[in-house]
Amino acid sequence: MVDVVMAPCSPVECRTAVVIDVLRATSTIVTALSNGASGVIPVKTIEEALEKKKEGVLICGERNAQKPKGFNLGNSPLEYRKEKISGKTIVLTTTNGTQVIEKIRSEEIIAASFLNLSAVVEYLKSKEDILLVCAGTNGRFSLEDFLLAGAIVKRLKRNDLGDGAHAAERYFESVENTREEIKKHSSHAKRLISLGFENDIEFCTTEDLFKTVPALVNGVFILKEFP
Image (spheres, rainbow, N blue to C red):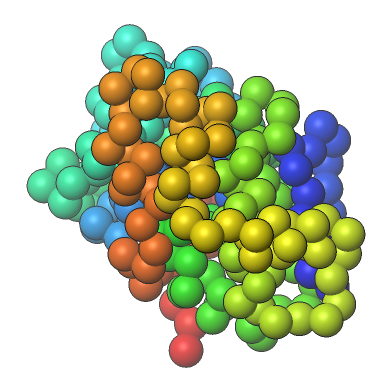
């Protein structure tokens, strides 16, 4: 079965979980690993991240869209250039994306974005029980995450869909232009634009820039190899 859940308040269970935070955590994870980071460690709190700084890692992320004091990088994927992060381990904490990971009980967790959409779909074709977990924004529905979930469901072409997957697929089918839909109607996108992050919206809505699939292994996102 394939299903979609929005901003879960309690733990969710499945065999294969796909965590989605288009703006911007999973887009950043995909970009960082695609640009040579050795791993991305998601943590819940700023304090956890700062504690790991002495281990020689890059501590990165945001609270309320802004880089916390003492952090190396924020949560804009455009900051994660090869010359800054290649070979580095990144500790990431964000307002939404890294929080929802804590609620997933699954045999495997992968990170999805528009940036690696086709690679994610190809990886999921061999999986049976799939749950697309949308991070949302501050515990509420996020249009952009649901839209990506719908794109994944549409491309999987499965018949065994849960109610959430049906709804996400129908929403995706109703949209003519993904980027414009997000820019015009996503409250989170509008807020990021107001804070000067419009380039992030453009970047995060670019499809198939990378052919990589990050998977959480022993608490660290690394690139998953598959045929």
